[in-house]
Length: 403
Image 1 (cartoon, helix red, strand yellow):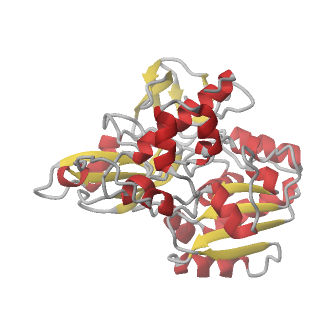
Image 2: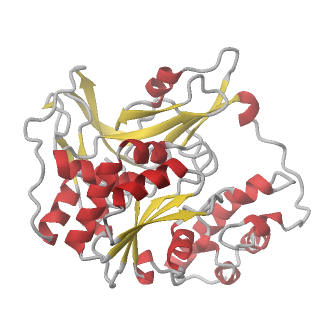
Image 3: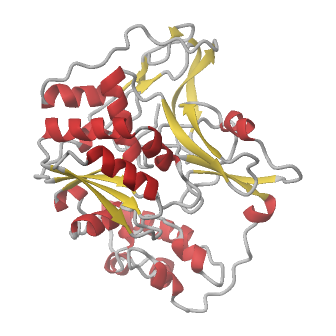
């Protein structure tokens, strides 16, 4: 019941209840929350406490599937006539940011400051991931429908779709689909890792800087992932809420790399069984998401969520970390940080728990892209250190601490 930023959804079913595809099983429990719907038909076998990968717990609804995938008879396209009914529809379908963060979309579409641009993040710069690319190639009409609805009902005057130049088929297709829409622009972006980060995307597409500690709306933009806006387009046409998503299966241990449309809640092990492991290769690690930013999963029994964009299957050889050595102060971590941060200096400030210095170094700008660890010749866990430093800094700021 926790597949999004904010309050977990509250279960509205009990053991023994029959459910269909699209049946509401978890209701948003606050303004910043999101509905959860069944992705299968069957019977609720349990409503129990579930431990998430981050160690936190939440309620979970366990469903024994009947294999029929019967659609809930109540499913029908929403009636949308104005902004209020549009936002209500977005909230009803349980749409969240499908690019990873999982922020409820209906909340995002109600900014407190004026916005002049809807920015569609179709960059997909993460290593191995191609699920957004697949969505663009197969569901371009849904993407355009979702964009037009957002512009029409929120009053945002224009939209820019940012796509990295290494996806020419996607650029050509969406240019063709939007050629008659004067308020929609497809913008090719440099094929550089990190371009998909919100702050960088806004700077590349609009030439604007989000104020320190601010939101994209403070720079006049709302950013939506391309798969999110596609899901919205599908919901407006069919009434089917977010119950499935396209995820990438890849990695050096993957026997059949491909993109699969997967019901939300499917166990990792069942998805991996669909693509298999290469003969003679031992699976060493599974990363949920992209290889650079995704966390290694503790158990293959974990379920996919709305924000699961991929599963990267790594062999034992690829998963084995290189031994870390002493920092040689070469400065590569600084040179390659897309946010212009200085991990080596952050490390020194964090070692002494210097909150003031961490603030001066803008550690809160780190979005854990992994570049610093990747380029470090000493193989130091720079990204993990940055994560710890950022968490410590934000916690101290919340408490009102200093040094």
